[in-house]
Length: 255
Image (tube, rainbow, N blue to C red; front, side, top):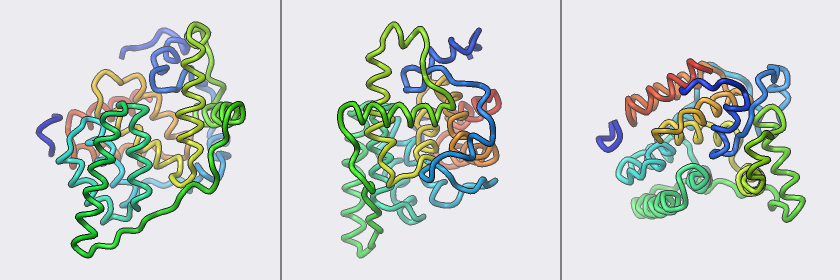
């Protein structure tokens, strides 16, 4: 347990969309059906289960400790994660994605720690799986915006739009190109894993409760079950922080 880390009800769906702008979600369609969720692309589809496997569980503390800048906790979590089946590429993708939620400083610090962990393990004779690179390079220009918009719509369940984006359209452009384009188009880490990381990061950050609840819905859109997300809260409680686990649990209950 780390010692360094221990709803507003919206009046309308548009209000929820405004609150979730900061994390790139916008307004979420409440009527997306279960069948639509099961028709996600191959990068997001996986059989629905009641439990997280060891690799998925390992993502949770890595993302949470990295989000709050707890390097000692991250070091231990990375070692456990690599032992549990995370590849170096998996861990690297999670920590790069961190920048969208906790900023570049913590992302870069976490990546630096991953480098140290990998080198230390190598010096001990531990051979970690390198993992894979994306199957294709991210498109550029208008093509990147188009694919990022498609990814954002698929994850959210409907086109992301509303008055807040009319007020600051460039914000949504950045979200579509940088987050849902450059990052989520990298298919060497599946969307379920990216959402497990995102939920864990947001649970670690006080004040991000609206975005956390929104990502509970998005996680389900990728095929993660409520039981798996409940297990995520249990992993947070056991390995990171009761406080973080409580935030995640409340968001899941509201969802």
